[in-house]
Length: 268
Image (tube, rainbow, N blue to C red; front, top):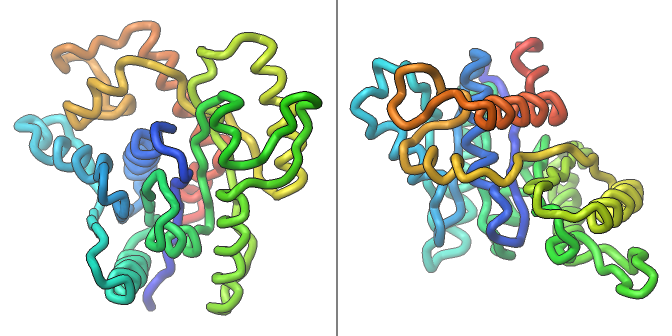
């Protein structure tokens, strides 16, 4: 009997929020728990996740280090929208039949493949730079009263994809998690404002808020080397287990716990 994977979509219509970094770390974290993972990259312009995985596969010491990689599919769009949507649907079906989890990385824009990809989500993870500017993708805020006026375009798109699921005969309930990334850049006043606004908005449109990944230079270096925080150990040149790196690994553990994805391995 074929199994149906748990589909995790990492999405936000704004670029530069760390979607691919979060995707790669979630993938390696799930693989490390013994789960079988497929991944799909539909971010054609950046293709960061695909390059990240290529960097990982291309390491000469990949086998020595025991670096696990997902069953990866890259799906850049073509001029044929209908064919593109069929390819994505088929990729989700095929990967979902043989893996425990499928992780989909989406572009930082409103795109038909991104909307379709969102409609497959059992868990939707939205990394959000912890700033009032980035909050605009989720909600319009009155600058004078600091109250939410209405949900914004991305929130409305998520709502529409739930309808798409219902049309396909699937449960419309999606565990939507907003990750507050890069907390270090906020002053106390802005941080409090974000906490209040996200708390109010989460009740209004139905998502959970979880701590994300901090602003750390190491993520750029890890990308080029095809590594994640979970791979760091003694003996890898240029990557010592400093206190900062250990703190970053704890952030990742907290993220895995907060998303509830760690439970998938226990249930398997």
